[in-house]
Length: 588
Image (cartoon, rainbow, N blue to C red; front, side, top):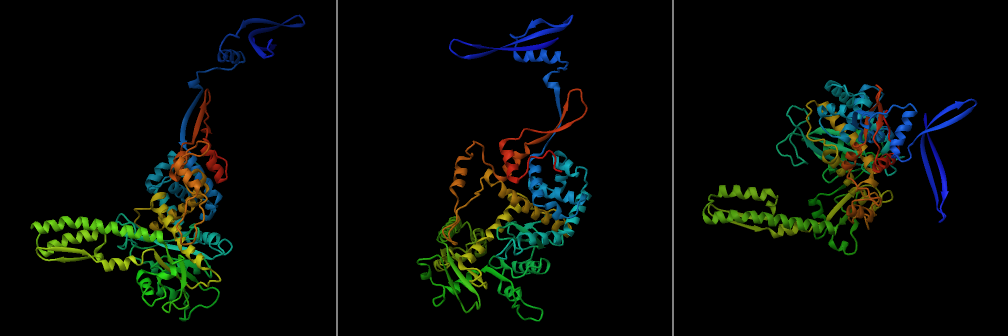
């Protein structure tokens, strides 16, 4: 018996063509030398799925209830780790780390995990079994000792890894300007036994905690190339000296221009920058240049009555190149940003007003006799003026039974005169780097600051540090730096899917504030692209990619599990297209 489907076409009087199908159950047999067909039933009136079921049964297929046909025995998040691994492979990160082996697989897994789900090493260890990353890289059964051994292996290869990154991004072929950015940050530690732990200026505002310092070296676009960890009491100038030694001696890069923040490249460091062993100054083509900014006292001296920096220079321009006998052989580029000046004036006034508001009830308590004694009054006043760091702007007179405060308007006016001004200094000749280019190079330090935000809070959660051994702390920071390198490229590739401004317009001038493109503003306003898909933050896009699961599917009457991906969304497909790879079933 079998099901026969017969179609016939009928043309109505209106000219419309109609197709009719009859579904018949027939028995076919031979009668002598002829083949005959016997119709046993007409299924045309049955629902299509019922007729299809009869047809499949007669063909010998075994039908089972829909809920029993397929069993998903395991489902793990896959898309986020697959995308990060695909970008790592595209960047050659596995080969960059070192020769293939279990230690490299563990190190790569730690870096990808730091991008996708930053957490402690122990938490990461248990998480690997819950995502495809663990099985595909063979790290699911790793122990804590294995992780620490991999960190030690990675720390031992730091110089080799960073030298490769330096050749890739800082060497003349990739970096014709021969420019590198460097800045210093800090993070606190939990515990007191690490040899690097020390008290120092906390850039996180975390008081009472021991900390480490770490300096990040990047190319002019902020792409990380090297990191160095220092004791928590290390100052900016000392860190700068060490990174210059690394760039010159270990990376073998000559004639670089190092860009650092104010206070980092001091006069003493400048004098030692190109000093030879015999005390003479290096004069050959391998000499290093630098760009930094002056501190407020030096700017104030330039703005003195007979100084070279006068307000009239900025009547029709926002930057001017000047010279000063205090800085022989150097170019000084003075800039005035009116937007920055207005913002600083507003902030100062807000802090002064907030301080005065807190001083009012203290003065009322003194007047009412509820607070007496110069020492007790001074303690209360000190708490207030220290809160907003406005002590230098207030004249305070205290006796045992009185309190008088007043603004030091002359001090406020002197500080306000510097609002919006900054002065850059560099020995690089104008023929090699013109005035606007010097300003742009210094402002590029914002990229290093952005990397620090990504490393410390936005993406990679470096802080706090829980490791005790010095080498483990350095390995932890190195993992975060390499994860930042991977994140830098992922953010750039995924800019069309996120709120990132992927094509910002050029500012009106080097001093002018950065602008957002009309496309970026439209992203923020509409929240959706023209196809109706939502835009994501970087972290939100990773979470969306995590919903692309890899499933172990078992069909009825079989014992083998078949890996299959969930149907990806259009956003997930586009994310992998932007990385330059199809969605992989396995990582390797």
